[in-house]
Length: 34
Image (tube, rainbow, N blue to C red; front, side, top):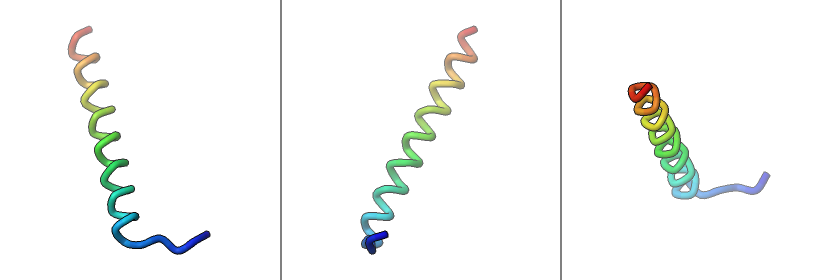
């Protein structure tokens, strides 16, 4: 596995967190609608 810079790890982690939050928001709103 190639060595990655901390900035790359940070951006990856941020993107992952944002996607998870958006996914949870979508699930929450769809659950609230029904």
